[in-house]
Length: 150
Image 1 (cartoon, rainbow, N blue to C red):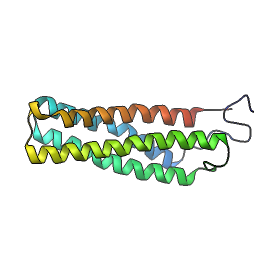
Image 2: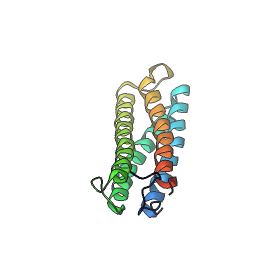
Image 3: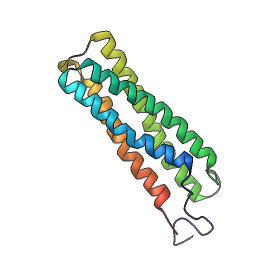
């Protein structure tokens, strides 16, 4: 067992295009969350719709970017404990991104079918909070993965 993390033989994961795009998409989840939440508070259909569409689009792009990131890593989940930890953190984040995508699409469908008002905005608020959570969780996950040094 090594006393350092990452284990000897593994330097920090190179921060390439895939990682950069993931980080940018994570950071872009915050404005989408704020737009959705502001639309819910005001009962504003345009702002809420824009926030939900942005949320859903960014979630889909982020899932694809995370897939590309996993393909570019120099190890696999079966390589060793380091690979397993990185894969577990990334998978945990991707799972939440997928749930955020489902929440945004559900809120959008519900808003289209039932109309938009401040009183009927629970699904929209949940989607906005989920996006904010995804952004914070993503920063923590990518921070652990990319800032861990030997």
